[in-house]
Image (cartoon, rainbow, N blue to C red; front, side, top):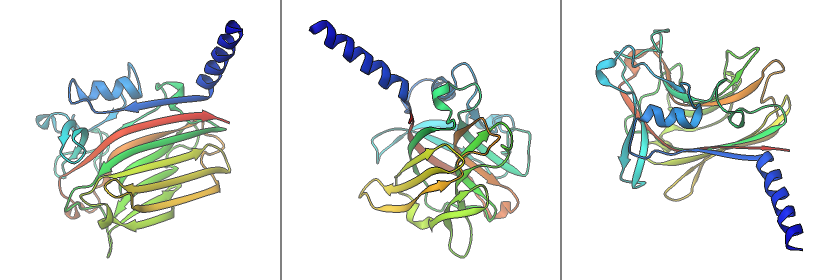
Length: 265
């Protein structure tokens, strides 16, 4: 009887392992920051996109710093207006991002029919100055086929009232909230994507200190992958246009507790 139960439990464990996978990227405060990121998001490869080539004197543009609010180490993403660019490849924009991509483990790639849960925390500093064009803090991009434009972006934008916008397919604003609501406070993001031509999508952003919901959107009928794409992948950091660089300043945005959880229906 014990043997039968043991076999049954083992089968259940194996089945759950096949349909459920969770990966976490947590700042430790020790070691090389890039190595820590790469080890989790793309072992043996480079999951970091930074302008170190243009600004070597500064050192690494992603570091681990101690945060007195969370009382632990977090990731600090820093970009400099006058010096940094996009990896010495493009000079009309600046990029300090981390990502999953082709060489990443399979459980970090969202494929047709899979459900991917992303969660993370971030804090925008006081005085933050977004571009009139784009200042992305998060992107969901595709790989393969028509993969140039992001499927989803969480992007700050300057206007009469500065906004934080959730944008679909680089055009449609799905939801928007005043950027001031997010300034100088830690927030937690929960994003769920059922990958498909007519899939489910949701995002909820809440303040950590009181749980107040600042931005929320969900739909069960939205294109979350294009017909010719192979898979979708996340990016986090600061990716901003230099079209109106006079609007900008040097910025440091804090991120923490990245989680990628994949399940299959």
